[in-house]
Length: 121
Length: 111
Image (cartoon, rainbow over all chains, first blue to last red; front, top):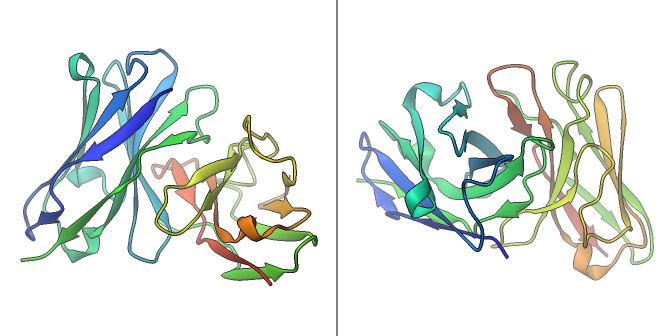
């Protein structure tokens, strides 16, 4: 059974870069047909899709964050990563990694447990 | 980016049916059948309940059903149970650089 697990610092200082990694276990991140996404949830608020990456390295990001977001994949480590630059308090949120498919891009059928990231000095 | 609009809260008694609406625009819900619904209990990750408007993933109760009319999608929960008390979010593909957009979320209470 495929499992996703986020990891990274829980506290980031303003203006610095938030870096998170999602480790895929129980299945191959190189399986064709899957998009690997980052989604965040501000405290007590709704969900916001950040972007996705395909195992080949193709990426697409939400334009509202596009200039600050980088998503990469390391297939040898079964990991994909998020970097969010120049963070502010508005980037404080729970960050989830999730999987969807090329044929059903709206269906995030597998999620990590989420990791809380606070932006504060 | 603007989120899809959902009612803040909906409530019902056990055994009843209730419907949650998700209103978008002709750039998202109205133009694509990539509408999904998620259930989220406190402190947990969202769980996929419906995808592509009407499809239920394996293991999801058939008490959950989805539909769409124009720019509005709906999730109906029939035979309401205590365990259905949770937050529900819709999501849609959007033909802009937002690509995927979520709804504002609806808190379902079972009275």
